[in-house]
Every structure is written in C-alpha cells, then in structure tokens.
Amino acid sequence: MNPSERALWGRWTAANTLSEAVGLGGTFALIGLLTPLVEGQQAGGILLAFLISVASGVVEATVVGLAQWWAMHPWFQDIRAIDWWRGTLYGALIAYVLGYLPSTLMQVAETSTGAPAAEPPQWMTLLLATGLGIAAGAVLSLFQWLVLRRVSGRAGLWIPANMLAWACGMPLIFLAVDIAFRMPALWQSLLVMTLALLAAGAVVGAIHGRFLVVISRSRFSQSRFS
View 1: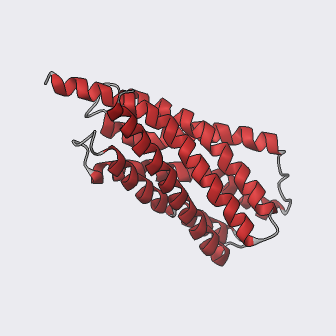
View 2: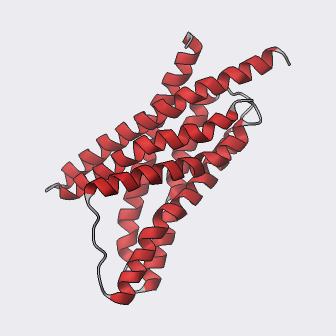
C-alpha cells in the first residue's frame, strides 16, 4: 500500500473500531433497558421485545454509517453521507430481523410448550456465530455495495469482504456476551463487553478496510481516464 492507501486503511479501521463499540454498545444498552419492560411469558410481549431489538439497529447503523462515511469521504468524494447512511441502515435492519428471529421463535415455542430449550455447547455457539457473521456480513453490505458500485468497478469485492470480516468478528462478540454473563460484578461485565466490542470493531474494520483500499484503486484509475 502507498501512503494514501495506508491512510485510508488506518482511518477506516480506527473509525470502525470506535463506532462499532459505541453503536453496538448503545444497541445492547437500549435492548437491555427496554426489553425487560415488555418481555413476558406471552407471545405479545416476546413480539414487542423482538421489534425493540430490531429497531435498536438504527443506533448502530447511524453511528457506524456516519463514521464510515467520514473515514472514506476524502477518497470517495462522490458518495454522499445520506446515501451511505441509508445503505448501512437498510442492511442493518434486515440483518437484525434475521439475527433475532430464531431466538424469538424459540421463545414463542417455549411459551407454548413450557419446556425450556437446551443451551448448545460453547463450541457450537461459536460455530453458529461464524455462520451468522457470514450471513450478516452479506446482508449488511448489500445496500452499501449498491452505493459503491456507482464509483468503482471493483465494488463487487465489498460483499465477500464483509462476509469474511464478520465471520471473524461475530464469534468475538458471542464469546464476550457469554463471559460477561458469568462476571460477578456489573462493572466487570461492562469492561468485558467494551473491550470485546473494540476488538471486534478493529478486526472487522481492518479486514474489510483492506478490501476498500483495493476498491479505491479502481475508482482512482477510472478517474484518471475519464
């Protein structure tokens, strides 16, 4: 990478590290505060908790989307903040629906049968988290790709880049949640989650940021010959 590309990668990685920690942290806090107020043994309460969880994705999408746009803007000046934010928001909301739907259906089933679902072993949970990361990465990046393809011939790399990035980042989040629930004090749980979200944001940002550098090369090449 040349100095300009290293600057893009570093700026992008830093923006993702902080924004994912703030955005996901805010999302988890919102879910933790609101869902206990509505969640109960009845299907209506479970459905309302599901809707709150999905709507909380607006927090992450806004923080992350605007931070990403700030990071990339000097290299992608044709992309407007509103377009990148919308692309991030649409992908996040769909990903949240798909992510929270299985656990919601399991809760509804538990309510109807009265039998609690068995907890899978940790290795299986982390394996499922990897698969979820692959699927979520594809969904999260789909609408961002529609924005990127207007300015770069290599925008098609963006979806597999996010699939790889979130396949690595999602297990970190799931592992941190499991550890945080085992902590004896609240401050310890918050510390674990904060460090994990920073680490996940850094890993995810570093991976798809490297692909963004390649995508930027195509755009610069097109600009020279336009």
